[in-house]
Image (cartoon, helix red, strand yellow):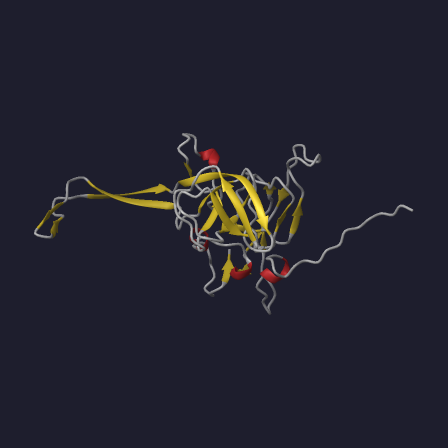
Length: 258
């Protein structure tokens, strides 16, 4: 006898997403919708998931960008090409083919230059003849392509092999994000972040099919919308680097509001 099969599972409370991430208000929850979303510009290649409160970047008339962030699980030297990332269900899952970089504190770099030489005499600095100019440029950082990923379930970590070293030592406070490799038109090995302006939330957990391989993906694409003016618990979100936290409108510690 042949029967149809069904697959059931329970959502784990150990990972982010679902109703647990949103801040509940006794007066009801506020939310605003964007008019239209867009096709995801950086979809996962494999089976994946968009969690509730996953940040995204919405620009009218353009594709949607998923903001992914990865927290280092262990320290790593500046020349390391094997690094370990959190596999705790809060950090995003790395994939082969992604370009990762260390998240900057700010997306702007300020440089101060002088039009004349500064003299030092008797341990005193003479600035009387100097004129200073401040310039601001967009941040670019070293990126590396992910060439292999292995998940260690027992220790909740991803072993990630990089094509090249990132050039900066990692600590367990380090957060990595995706790099905009396409912007490196001069093949300098440095690029800006892929998602500079995460400005909307994905509202509900969503399972994604693969966009490469498995015999089912041929030009697959996803369209997604988002919400804003909503609040989430930071502890139940993905790791948030300083340049993203700078967008937080909440005055309450532990709550992220965009």
